[in-house]
Amino acid sequence: MISIYKKELHNFFSSLIGYIVMAVFITSIGLFMWVFSDTSVLDYNFATMDQLFSIGPLVFLFLIPAVTMSSFADERAKGTIELLYTKPLTTNEIILGKYFASLTLVIIALIPTLIYLYSIWELGSPKGNLDMGSVIGSYIGLLFLAGAFVAIGLFASAFSNNQIIAFIVAAFLCFAVHWSFYYISAMPIFRGSFDLFLQKLGMNYHYTNISQGLIESKDIVYFLSVIGLFLFVTKLKIDQREG
Image (tube, rainbow, N blue to C red; front, side, top):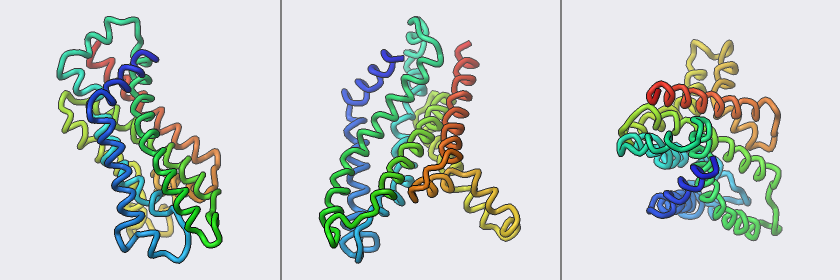
């Protein structure tokens, strides 16, 4: 697993992929936090990191599928996937190596946002007037969300030899699992009866809970279950195609 992990990270940073991912993420979040008038912190009357944590999932929706789309699709298209199976590696080790490498890249892209945190801390009146419990919870929520999106992205990449198709499928599935249950629950037919149940099926409900600083076991179990499910079906698909 470690060898695959190192190989994937090397591929990210030996090409433009890793740098583009970080640049796009930081620039997108920076524009919403400091430039666009509707969301700019400078136009608020209080210090907040809400812009990062509300826009983050939307940026991840496009960013993470772009990171994962080549994980299996490109290797299969180039015929290099067979080389992996000539090495003493199990399917689980290959999947986990690629998974943790992609997740590491997303975490590295998140680290520079601490500059925004420091800036808002300094801008607070008085200095440091910021709900750090909520901020820490939101960062943890973003990490779990990134983990789930990466698992979904690997699943989509395992289904196709075409990176573009893998990207589109991953983006659609990420949107469906994160937001669709919320919108479905708002339909009049479900309102007042099954709306809360439907919301709990989606990631948005659990991400929102964690972002409020309420880190409960049920939300952690939910994200770990989603990650485990998509990694499991990824293994099934790879074993089916390569078997």
